[in-house]
Image (spheres, rainbow, N blue to C red):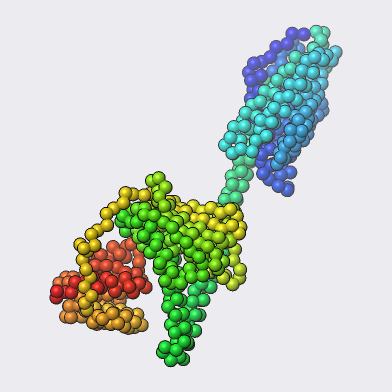
Length: 619
């Protein structure tokens, strides 16, 4: 019997097959990402959508067949072919949607899909009611089965053997759907080529429905089912993404809250220890005679713990300013060798390294840097080495030139670092595990501050360790510059060690009186005022050489005091001595008329040196 096909319906069948395959593979991913009842619901929905799509392609392909007689389909057999397509599709998706799909499982799924598609096709062909029945060419039947199995396996392999990024995986699904769609179509039309319709065949019944209308109806219903499944998949994927984002945000908030609580507890511990020591020392000093061992012990404790508190506050403020980019660097040509030696000398004088063996070896190498900040880097690195190294342990500090770079290396023979700690050692507030007594102390900000300061200088800092118990080595790399000639010592202006008239404007009585005692001990004549108006009166009437002015004063702040003093003609050296230490505060002080800005607590030696260099107003 002569056979030919309606080309438009053939094309429709191919499009339906590809769309059904894409829907199935997309739903397989959704099944993989779901769990419990949701996974089972997506599995059944995916199997139903894919089964209907495959069956619709087959049925539209059947309707595309043009025979010189009407064709009638037995409804029960046709529905059986649809059921076969749904069942086999569900089974194949069950295998393909597993988290890990081995080649054996893919091969099994491919065979199952191939056999299922062939079974659906030939059961559907059996629904055609003609007599005598259709005969089949076994070679073409075998070819159709081989095509179905091979192409199904290829499609599943393309879509599910990769765990790459979402975008690339989407491309693989599209390509897998195209391969699978052509596989289904190829198998169908190979099966149709196997069919031999007898030339004397007759239809067992009367055709009541137009083929074109039936093909359109089947296609429309199928497309509705497939697009509905894809829409549900898209909605669920977006909901899952939003839920994942919310979970991530909640986890991040919980982590931030936990880190905050841990930091506050750690800060409380670090602050209470020196405060307890200060409280005990003050009590001991009040109960002891001056010059006795107990009085001297209390004095030493007060000195050490005041310095510790000052360091804690400075580090907290510095790391905050460094992270927000508010640290202003005073860059000058600097011999790194001399700066490191100066920092080590200060550490020795403070007794920080007296229980360790520190070996320093350096060579002159010049950098453009802020001397104070570089010494802060050295201090923090050495303190870190001291905390990590048992008493009598060795700490090596080296300075050398390496090509265009200046290298500062601080190595120790201490506890060493495991890979996780080494990767996070520069993180803010990160500390390696400590015991409940926190014998090492610290806030976990020193190394963060080191990294920020070095990076602000255009350099880099790194850490290396061979593991726990094998020590660690921190290396700072800065850009080296050509050496600069030191100024002729004979041309330096000598500081005249003469008495200066100094005004202190400070509302805190303890701060005012203690500073006055320090300055009078240095031989200066000191006047005081406790608020802005009295300070201005002293400045204009007494004409002091130097005025140390707090910013947060009652009635008139320090900025306004400086502006009025300058407008009245005061030639005194105005020094802002305040707890406000941001770069904006320094700029405001300069604009108000201050000559210098010192952040509390100011180093006494630096303050005295600044006052000593001041020219007397009447001189």
